[in-house]
Image 1 (cartoon, rainbow, N blue to C red):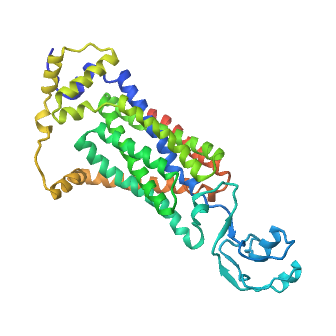
Image 2 (cartoon, one colour; image 1 turned 180 degrees about the vertical axis):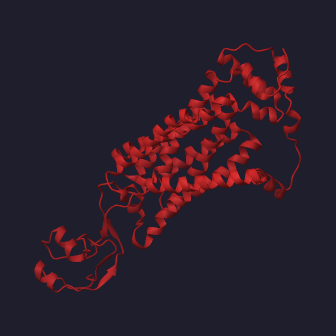
Length: 408
């Protein structure tokens, strides 16, 4: 049997569109669904319920109803809704026993709230838990900001790590971080702890998903890379559609965070079912390991292959092996740091690459701002928040299915 001219020829030999590829592809969907949960969970975890100043420290006359206490203590706005950040300065006043007389003599001076009561129709959220309202509203934005920061750092780090150490170890380590951090986040005792573990969740999510995406595109036929790449977004839409259903029945933030974290344990299955990329192994000079994985691929796909020695020779004979084998050379910290960002610089190396890179960066910026801007503000758009989020997520599912024929 002749030598393979390139890796795609070797992949064709063992099967480049068989059961082995589809099995790995569908296993990566687990993370796709989980991303749909975690990326958009702050819509419900960080929901801002109707709130007003707490009156629990004020001594009201006996016989007053809770509505009378609230009406006496809290002013209304122009739309006859209770103000959410101000109350009358009555903490040290003597309140008449008769309600009408008390209202007539009440001061008009206002003070800021020191504590709040919350409506519980949407459950007990992180906003309720840590009073992320009024002067503390900016902290609520930090919760989602820290998550997206984790996505950003994760994309940079895991891209480098998967090239340096392999797709499989990067996926497995990121999966462990995701399982642990997502469950611990459910039991956060303060705001700082919560945003820290939300950062770790996002950081690890990037690793599992991005490295899985690269792995899938490296083991399929070139003509399948586009549809497989697009369909990796399909489970994201499923997760985004399921999230409002889960949130409808599980409203309190602790239980909801735990409910979307427990499925992360399914990532443990990756240890047995997600192999290393044979393309990466060959580039790293680990030919024997690549041979074993390709043998397993051929077995699952039902394709006959040469014997071990001949297959190993085919692998070693790939024309690009000399250019891609990584030498074990000691580098200083700064050299390692520079190496980590070397690939980013390649995106701007030529005028054509610069144009394409800037175009893609700008497109993703606009798409992300519009998509997440709408998703995180469904409460302000109008309509039922659960229905709005379901429609938003399901639109992603439909788009993935429709776009593939359009690109053909």
